[in-house]
Image (cartoon, rainbow over all chains, first blue to last red; front, top):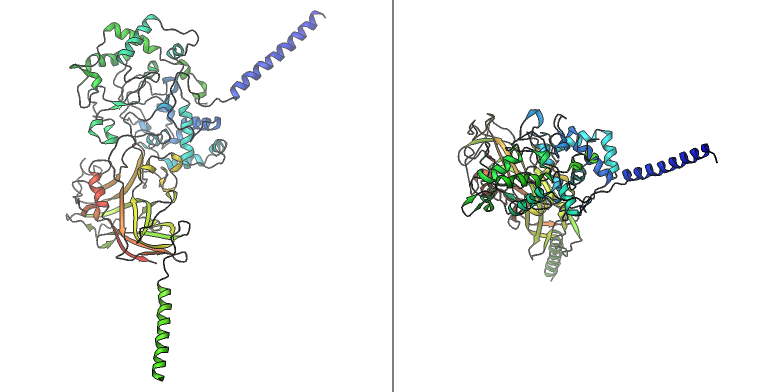
Length: 348
Length: 283
C-alpha cells in the first residue's frame, strides 16, 4: 500500500466517523426529552398527567408565546415583557410596558420554574398555570385583547391549524388546547444550571469560593426562611416592609379581600438576579444593593408586616457591609447563563 | 225494576267513565328509576317588578323602591346543579357535565335550562345561582360550553370570566340611571352606567367571599312537575330583576352604582336569592 492508499482509507474512515458523529448529534436534536425534574429540585406541583409535555405541544406553545396576535392590535407578545435574555422579565422597566405604550402597575415577573408554583402573579388571584395567560391577554395595560378573538385569529391561519393538528391530533383550536400548549412551553422554562446547582449536585467539580460560602451561610441564617432552597422562594405571600407605592397597591388583598392579606406580595425567587433588575413588585429598586439596604435599614412597620422582619422590637434584618458583600457574592452563584442562552426557549 | 236496572246501568257506566277519566288524568307516577330519563326544563322568564323586561327603555324607565328611575342594558346569570325531589323524598341530581346554563336575557333561546331526569312527579326544584366552587377550580379541560373562558367574546360583549382573579361572574346586571354621578364614585365616563358583577366562589386556598347561592322552589302551590317521556314538563319561573334593588338588603343605585368583587357584593347576592318565583308548570 502506498501513501495514496493510506490517504484514501484515512479519508473514508474520517468520513465514516464524521457521519457517525453527526448522526449522534442529529439524534440528540431529534430526541425531545420533555420535562425533566432537576435532581436537586422537589417534585413539581403542575399537573403533568392532565397535560403531558410533548415536542409538538411545546413547539406550539413556544410559537404562541412569541405570537403578537395574542394582543388586540397584533403588536405585543408574551415575549415582549418576558424577554429570555432578561430571564424572561422586562429588564430596565420598573412596571411592564404593554400595548399602545400603556404602563401597568407591577414589574413583570420571570417565566421560570413555574411548574413548582402554586400561585401566580405578584398579588395572587390565579392558582392554575393553565388559566394564567387569560390575565395578561385581557388586561387593558398589557395585551387588551379577548380570548375569543385570539382563537379566531389563530383559526384563520393555516400555520396554526397545522400546528394544533400535530400537537393535539385535530385542527380544532380550543381554549383548552391553547392554554395547554402555552403551559407546555412555560413549564419547560426551567432554570437549574447555576453554579449553586452544580455545587449542590456535585457536578463539574464545582465549589464555592470562601466569600460565596460565607455568603451562603449568611443567606441560610437570614434569608432562607422566605427564599427557601432550591427554588429560592417558599411560594408564600408576605409583606416585606416596603413603604406604600404611589398607587397604594394592596397586593394579595385585592384577590381575597381579607384584611390579613393587605400589602402582601408573592415572595420572588432569587435566581437570575443578574438579569432581572429592577426588583420588587413595582420595580422600585434598581440594584441588589438597594434591596439589601431596604432589608437592613428601611423596613416600614405597615399593616401585616411579616413577623420575621420585626423581632425584638427591631425592624428589618441585621446585615453589616461585609455581610452584604458576601451575600451579593453568593447570590451571583444563582445566575444561570445556560437558561438565558437556551436556544430551545428562544423565538425560532 | 226497570227503573232500577236503568239506574244501575247508568251508575255502572258513570263509574266506568269516572275510573277511565281518572286513569287518564292521573297516570300514576312511574317507578322512580335513575335510568328511566325523560325531558324536563326550567324556564327563567326575566321580569322587572310588574313589567316584562325590555332593554334601554329610557322613555318609560323602571323605578325601584327608593324612587330611582333606571333602564337595563344587560342581564345574564349562571344556573347550575339542577336537582328535583318527589313528595316521598326521592331526589335526583342532573349529571354534573350537563348541568351548567348561562341565561342571557338578550337571547330568548337561552331562557330554558333543558335537562333529563327520571320519570316522576316532582314537588321540589333546587338549583345553584352561580358556578359551584368545585367547578370553579377545575382544570381547563372541564371548562367547555358556557364555562369556556373564551365564551361570549370579551368582557364588554358579555364575557362572564374573571381572568385576574380566576373565577366566574355569577350574575351580571348593567344599565343606566340618571342618579349616577359623573365622578369616580359614579361613572367618570359620563354615561351614567351601573354595573353589578356578582361572583366569588369561596377561594382557592384561603376562604374568601362566597356568593354561590342555592335556590329551592316549592312546586306544590303553583303546580308539580309531572315528568314523562311523552311530554315536556316545564317549570315556569319568573325572575324579578327588581329584587336586585328591592330585596331584603335594598339599596340606592346612586350609593352603589358599581359592585363587583367587593365585600358589598355579599349584600346584593342575598337579594338575588329572592328573585325566583314559581308561576306555573306546563306538563
